[in-house]
Length: 277
Image (cartoon, rainbow, N blue to C red; front, top):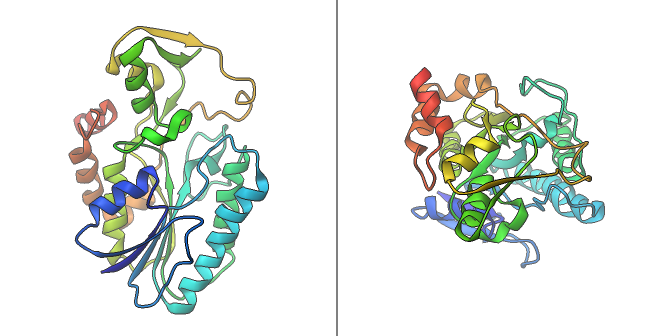
């Protein structure tokens, strides 16, 4: 297949490029000469400002919203299937069910940028597939450049090399759905042959505490206060409802989650899912 990948220099983008090396790839990053859709079979749009604490709405709107909606229009015009990285951040800090049908409640500018793209999608009638995936907490190789936005698996491992692992106070009760990047990529690849438009969660369906991740990495652990600018917007719990994804992928998705266990970091969440199934 001839595939355009945007955001190829990012964490998920680097993994996607490596996983799709047997395809004919075109690559685009923000600031490079404009992309070319001619002759493409698929577009995977990963490019975005991914900093959840970004306060520059002008940049977020330009890169995350306007660029994405224009790309949707262009792909529709050329009848090219499009996959878009959305985010579980659209659920907001109070949601407990995480169903795609739940009302969105974005609590920061980044989440709003993703929710506005989803709103645009809901208001259109696609003539070729437009597939949006709400990523939960993705982790894996190539997170080095993400700094404070890296997954706890990466941050805690780096902290443990030189000193103490720093977790927020109350982290035993702060739980997230941590999903290996390999699983995210498997979903994208499987949807290449799914001629449907829609929005789907990508997670493991298991919530795991930050404290348990720190304990797995090993080393001294110290609790620090939550930064004041995060207290009102911080998602203390996420756990993907996978009902809609299972309707499309069935057991294939469970196999993908199981095979990803131990990929770069061993995920107790995956182990628990396998044990309890």
